Length: 274
Image (spheres, rainbow, N blue to C red):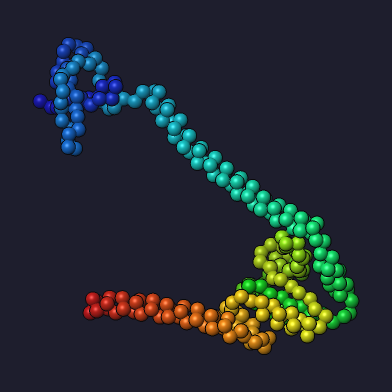
């Protein structure tokens, strides 16, 4: 006799024992014991059975609602996070501008504005001008004429790796959050991308003095600063140079150790193959 398994309307799995009459059947419930399905408990009578577990219309609709909720919740959470990011960005931007305006209001910095006006006047005059451009890794000084500007542009194109100056935003005036003002040259014509700080001088001597003073203010050296010192014949601070060399030595020793460990692993792999 074949064992017949069915499911009750309330979701129980049962084994059919026999027929009570033409409409009712005698069944026994199936339980899971140590991972095995075992008939257990008293027999009982049911009027309707199903070949598969029955799910009510209500349960089905609730499942649909739950699935839709989880999907839409993720979408709305993502939209809310993007809105929060935009809000934080707008707040940070406005906060920096408000701080700058407050600082300007407290201290108008007339000298900074005079400096800007003098630079603009120098641009339209025939006086000698020198331009100093720098970012985190490069310091350049050129005479402000066609040849000097072209030299700077060539250096920028080389450092960025491709030509970007068919339309070049030559110069921008920025206000820092402390109220000071600074000229910068931008990577893109719309003012986006990275930028480099720019200073103007009426003589090469003034420019070199500025570079010397700026170099003296450095808290520590990196490779680019060592190259800058060679380039402008600047005197290196012995303590800062020692700290730089110590850090470089430590980095090299670490790389050697890592290389030795790697070599040891490769030699062991080679021995296993042999």
